[in-house]
Length: 268
Image (tube, rainbow, N blue to C red; front, side, top):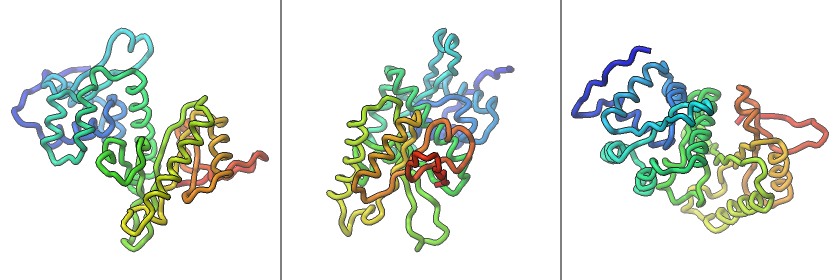
């Protein structure tokens, strides 16, 4: 691939700044993820990331271990990149910026989780086009309406008429082997959050977001479904698996579990 020597500029262009904002949204990204999210050719994205890296706005993580594992290079904001986003019209909280100053020392687990969430968002964006708006954890941190710890993604459906009821979701990923008591505690935390905050001046009164759980395997999915069925909840719970999401099918979500294999998968 022909690599052009980066041209240095005193000011960031609108496209460059937009790319930095997207990277702040997901925290860690790869060329392929940005290419799909921005609907741009991978070579174009690579060259733009090269320029921003050479100018000191981005950090590129790639070494021999990445090559051996078949992992792509991972990009994140440097201190200079964070300052550029902070000085723009982006609306991230100071907590997000403070956390991203630690990008260079982030654990492999955090990086992999961030990339998995970005990949999931790209897939949902492709499946539902412009009918859904996807907000990452970095984007919703500044809103105190959401339960802490925050869900991975907040999803809102674009309504045709302003008077239409809001359809929205909170998405959380669940690893295989997550202990049942941890899953039960998380469901209970959402219910208690609703009960504590329900009131006329609360955004989610009588319309708490549907909880979406993306499970690593069907065993974990079944446990969540059974817990939801046996709990009193003021909101709906829907589940899917990583495999079904990545299959490309839109109808991948379950409202309930049927041991007779008569389960009906639905769209969001």
